[in-house]
Length: 162
Ligand SMILES: [Zn+2]
Image (cartoon, rainbow, N blue to C red; front, top):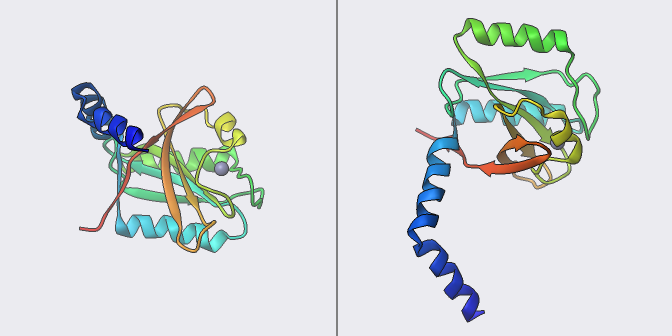
């Protein structure tokens, strides 16, 4: 046990580790206002026991400015589907606001907030992040990921209370 703690200290004190960690946080974090966050959380609640899905958009990378709830046309508790037509119409609306899609969000009604095999397979826009809200516990739990070639990296998802 003592050895384990010692190793961890070494890791944190290493200048290289600190630098790469800092770059990751500065470059890839996502920030959302409390109001928009609540909008996404409430959408997921309304759709229970089915999965909810939607888009998070903004004008600059990492700053979410709008939430676009979409209808899960499959009404499934483990998968979501939105027709191409609806997606295209929503993308047009987002474009009219001078924004672009920063992330696709969906809910996990009964499982932890980590991408499933199906999630990884279906997420092909690697420049767009994946946000998952889990309702497994009584308090919703949100995580944000970047996806590439069937693997994922977690990124900080900050809720701005100001
Ligand atoms: Zn999922």
